[in-house]
Length: 367
Image (cartoon, rainbow, N blue to C red; front, side, top):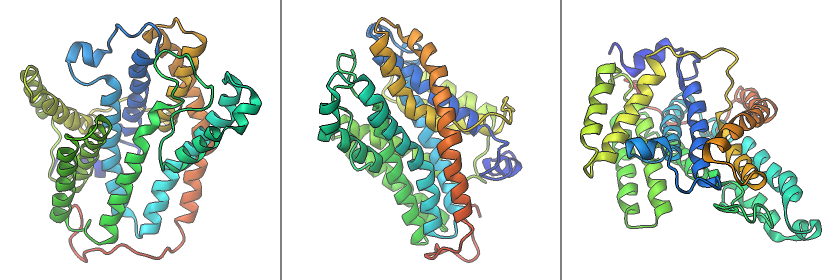
């Protein structure tokens, strides 16, 4: 279909091409997380609201940004699964994208920042089991640990060292489920995959409504990831037109005083992200690097540092200070950690791994 996602994807050079706008969208989303967190972490921010909640009545900007991350991730991970020849290659690709940057961030927070700003003695800090469980629990994503001994005590919102980490175990679990679809040979069957992904997402969301708020949020992100994967699976059948963006926006606005408003806004957001990724030619210079993950990882700790040493900062003041500082650290993370890790994976990926995916011999995912 002309003007479908598949048409634009092919024109962009495939799922690994740089002619789309995903890189810029992810950076904007990561920066939007900083903006949203500013209204929680800044000392004078309790009476102020961010743009999305104040003017649109939708979720706050951090929620919107994380949803965009999961939506794009579902789309790109589905593409990665389609291109991968084995479960080992797919797992390595996902692990090298997720863990190296995370490991270094966790170590920097626990072994560099923590001892410099803790209110406890150095002996107490280094001998505390909490210091070392922070490293292991967060680096493995086994269970997110929020606190380090004596760090950020007295900060208005919370002493949490890095409140952004909560989404990463959810992301990792999505990788596992997608890999399982590939390993069982299910991913090659488009409609069976559609039914399984949609059914799993809906079941997860419905089950979570009776559970705690964290589980509800995890289920919401699962839905966005599933939508991204389904958009990739049906990429040749989904058209991208500005008129559809306009219709969905009008429908969402018409639903603003009803219980359907969040669903309508989410549908409009999902479609708008893919239209924005492929249709308009946004400025994306070749020197623009993939610092969105680093921006997401380091934004919260840097904002907590600002809250500690500049407690009178307003949300906007914190945002203005935090964004350039975070971008600099994120750039270092990309050049020194993430990019070398991805280059190492490309070297490994030339090897012939075992455990190949089962594939349908004729009809592919996009067939």
